[in-house]
Image (tube, rainbow, N blue to C red; front, side, top):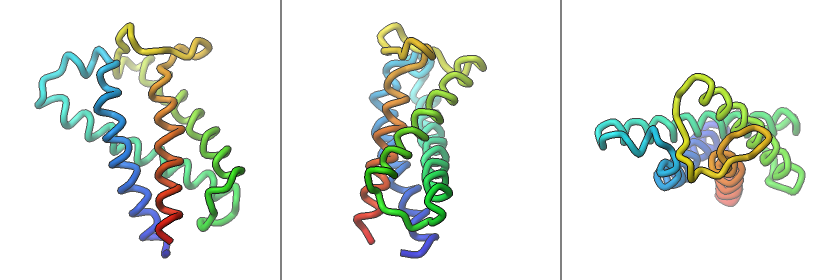
Length: 139
């Protein structure tokens, strides 16, 4: 698989999986639950687009570590994906809270040390792994 195809498939799967995650996950945010449909749809689509960038950063981080863009999703690379995903998600959530990009509802479970939502961190653990698994299977 050439690099363009691989990056396209990562982007496509990342968008679809994150859109599927973002919709139910958005019910844990005060910001999105108070929006009209006209405001909500573009917001969720933009969020899923931003998730593509995060997953591409995870892919590139693993690629730099492996010194290759053609790595397999083995145990070491799964661990790297999880670690990079957690760092990216926690960093983004802290930044977004400090810039008032959104507000959690009280039902959002929080990671105590960082006071960030559990579900957005899980999202950047699960969706990259599923994306990389499927792209590797398509070879």
